[in-house]
Length: 432
Image (tube, rainbow, N blue to C red; front, side, top):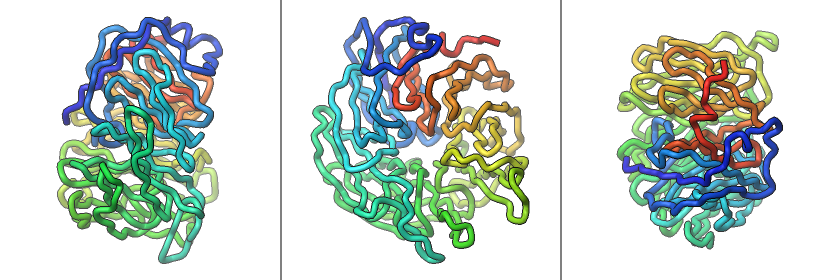
């Protein structure tokens, strides 16, 4: 992938941003702006199928912050000297990567949870919430009774270029393959749109809705998970799907995963996490997370891991996307308040860390250190080789499924309603 996102940010002390209260700012604050470079695209969740959003950039770390009027669940995208963010306040924001200054904001028709996909000077986001419209043994539909939509927005001006309206929610992020945007949604289908026009190219029925399972693409194959129902007795099978991006043909499907979990790709395998409530077992020890490795070419199961019985915690998604790097899968277990490293080849747990609250995001790997946050606002720095917790920094609001991005010496992350950019070295400095 041709990804060289640079994030030249303004210089301000990290201590100012991570003061005792670390109060969110009402607007962007920054100093010492530099000229943002031009970059290429952001093509899927965390911009790669392995989800490790760490890119080269300036050697100096900078600091700014920008607050929106709604919670931020979608991931950040960094393209062409601009940070793109989307919020529950129905808006997409373009922020100058050098200052945090607002370049433009664009209003949509509903809550936005999908990551901004950016290519050819077009930003694409989808709207939607998990309102259940239909739940039967044969059909599920989630979304707005009046419909949701995918929006194509001019990346330079914020002007809406096209709108593709859908029956179900469009919470998952598409994957861009060539000029095709491929995504699942809340109407039991996977579909592809033309990037430039928003017009449908193909549409493939699947079993169940896709809630937060953003698509991951490798070459001309797209992977995602579908199958969800709020009524356990009516819950349809959950499948991980591999589809031909050009035609929509289902290449294989395998009964693993969770419609909230984006597949992670690496070492010719697809890694998915699931969440299961054990029937006949009383709470709180009646839920487990499962992690499954599938052969990317055939869908055959390579290995599977089942966690100890946890407690069903009402925090939204019960399954999270992982991150693959150098033969290791780094995976949160939201049901267990744990974070694990697995051998990608064998599924052997290499180490585990207990977190103070569920982790719903995928981590990033920076200089052999893992960086991720939990839903209570704790941000962890963990030694990737040993699992030793090196630092825990407290933010004023919790973290969601919006994962960090590191560019050069700067980390950008969304916490609650606010986007923060800060020097990664000092944020990740060991405190224990």
